[in-house]
Image 1 (tube, rainbow, N blue to C red):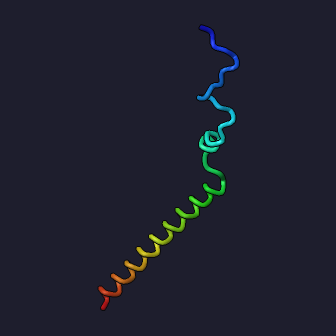
Image 2 (cartoon, rainbow, N blue to C red; image 1 turned 60 degrees about the vertical axis):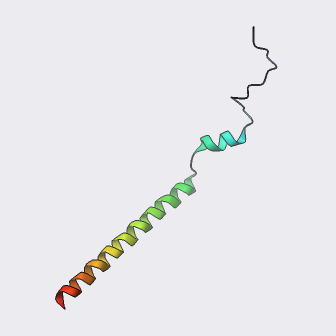
Image 3 (tube, rainbow, N blue to C red; image 1 turned 30 degrees about the horizontal axis):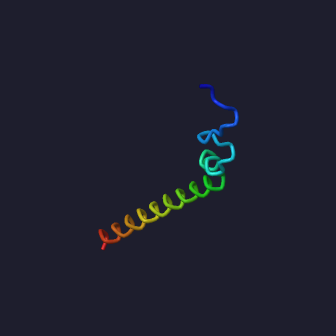
Length: 62
């Protein structure tokens, strides 16, 4: 049986907006937000490490 031309292909729907947004990926602003968030987290971890080190040096010298 040959496939009829008027049949609609539901798997390859050109009008499916959800599929277009899923295959699009992350936008540039989302990538920038993730990078800035990572930098902030790394800075906070570094700051906490410096504070712990300074506190331990102050305890040792006391």
